[in-house]
Figure 1: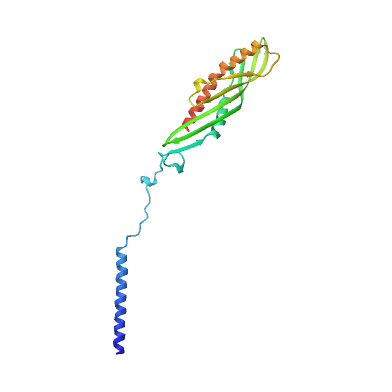
Figure 2 (figure 1 turned 180 degrees about the vertical axis):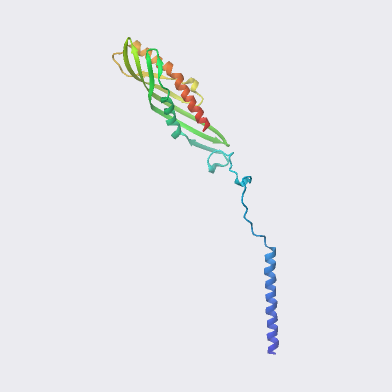
Length: 203
């Protein structure tokens, strides 16, 4: 009786072991194969940067983004205007010594993945001239104020000239110098601002 019980128990263990082995083999056969690493080639789309998208990495849709360009624009305007150089006047020469005021904003806007730029500025230029007035050489200083102007409005650029106080200068001489400065500096200053505008568009 004892031998029969032992034999029956042994048979059950063998059947259980065989069933487990079959189950493991079946699961292994049905499982999906493990992924095999694949090196991307330069032609694969995943390896290509999205060069057609403008703006920051977070704005891949290119919906709306505005960026200030003041850190570049303000010093660039000053640099360009000081480089105007010496201008010949009817009674001597004059040049821009310094841009004493350069107030405004320049910006880049991306809307629907299209780039737009713009700016608004107002300026004051410190000028110095070496003139020959009525046979006497004289140094003359003053300022040229450029009222607010914006992108695409340089054809309408305006200037206002004011000379430093000089009691020895005749009123008619002051008027002539102011007219000279306004007339002869307008176009060179406009050209430099047009250069700035083009550089802004190319950014």
